Amino acid sequence: MTTGTRILGARFTGGETTFTVWAPERERVDLVFERYEADGGRDIRPLTRQEHGYWCGRFDDLPPGSLYRYRLDGDASLIFPDPASQYQPLGVHGPSQVIDAAAFQWTDEGWRVPPLERMTFYELHVGTFTPAGTFDGVVERLDYLWRLGVTAIELMPIGDFAGAHNWGYDGAAIFAPARCYGTPDSLRALVDAAHRKGIAVVFDVVYNHFGPDGAYAGVFSPHYYSDRHRSPWGRGLNFDGPHSAQVRRFFIENARQWVQDYHADALRLDATHAIVDESAPHFLAELTSAVRAEGGRDVVIVAEDHRNLARMLAPVAEGGFGIDAVWADDFHHQARVHTAGDRDGYYAEFTGTTADLAETLRRGWFFTGQASPRSGQPRGTDPSGLHPPQFVICVQNHDQVGNRFDGARLHHQIDPAAYRALTVLLLVAPHTPLLFMGQEWAATTPFQFFTDHHEELGRLVTKGRRAEFASFDSFKDTEAVPDPQEHLTFARSRLHWGEVDRRPHAGVLRLYERLLHLRQSHPALQAHGRDAFDVAAVDEQTLTLRRCNRGASATLVAIVKLSGDRPATVGVEPDLAHLLLSTEDPDIVDEPRPIRVDRVEGTVRLERPGAILLASVLC
Image (cartoon, rainbow, N blue to C red; front, side, top):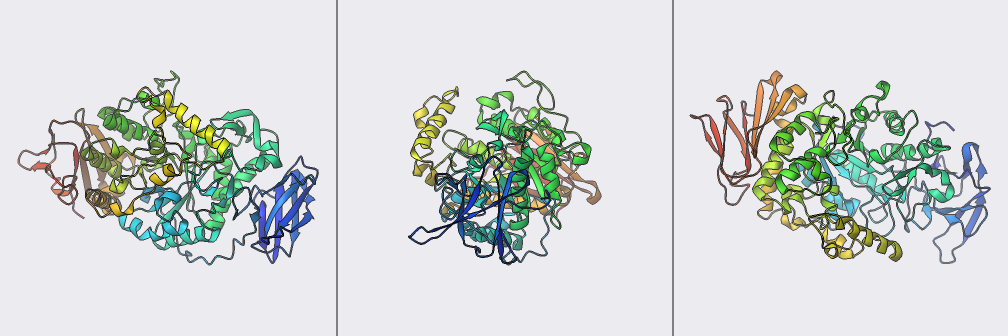
């Protein structure tokens, strides 16, 4: 079996279904074919042992739609779903289903993945994005997302999980789209429809741990877990010990499945700092190389990693991991400290000054090797060889909202004028912006941490969640932490779409639409090199961000006042004659306090937090 061939799970081709599962320590593995009928009849068929501990069988009478499990060592108490199941119609503890991945009729033959510098990521949770909470529900909102100016939707993990709702990071059947969101073909239909709209689709995948309930890989082989490494979620996965080649293959086949069978345009790798691999090549380098080998499809790979390691973004041929971009959270943390005053946890490492915020944008991340104030150890590496679009920045994402005790969004906690100003800074910077669903209209709904585990595990999750916040200096009332297990916690997190057309939400939405249109159309914003932008702190509350496209003789300057009650006056060049946008435009804010441009004096005066865009050419 070559590593270039996908083998795991039930694969239907040429009228036959081939079943393959890895269980190297088992003496016998049987396929248990199950029926929907009330008699619960079963048909048991032995599989044949192959090299490296794989078990295989090929049958011509188990077509798509067939339900099956595996029995281990002939023991009737050891019957489990397929760890690489493509669908779990009755839940992660139920039987797996044979799926014909080739039956779907794609219409995206001419689709091409947009380059990274043209991407604006829009992160969404399928279950709370729409009232339906399904893949079909997302399809119904694609017109809205296209009008907004989004070029890529990022789906929080959609691998199946225990219970009726979950963030997705408790994945159990990671090859199977969550049955509460829809069928495999409804996920394919979402991707196909997005491509017709010119919108790329990013799949968020979790390769650093298994969920606590319903993940059965470990019963097939203990070698999925490491004897030497641990993760924040318990036992680490085995990427560098005995039998690790087969473990690596399991996750790489998962990544290739999303690209091949679902036409994923990008993968967002969750918490790669928790993937411990002391071997060579590193698992991430092997993963990116395997995904890039998929014929005919360009795939963007993004990592979530707080270590600020430039090596991750270097090509594999140069000793790197081959990743295209990384979540650069230092920008979020500096901005949050400045605007909301957060000081707990990792926020204590950041000053939030406009000088440090400017430096963070110039570098891409703030820590480049200097000592961390909390640990005293060096953090980060030199990012000067990287390009601005390789840094994904945000002011909200699922973690930074949902991991607050009450799921409050940034705009729930700061002045609306400051929020509008920070939005301009985010969307005019040359870095790749990420939006979190609803932030574009300043949604009133929180995004809280929710689970639907069985009662015993649920009690532990609730207890752990409340203990987590007991250490926060600014928060001691742990009983106020919403119970993740309560259905209301999930229901509160669902967006209210009726807000979109009402003020003040409609005005905020117009601000986002205009800024995203400018990102795609203004010539000054089409140059993305380090030499094509600069950012400077004017005073303790105000920054200027300059974008310049020398080839198009175009310059755009954003003047951004993030805080403070006192007016700010900033000098501007006379050639910046065109006013493109102001956060005090009357159709954006109900009671505007106009930002005044004095052409004679060559100054801009902001009465309160806000931002203005001036340009040398008008497009």
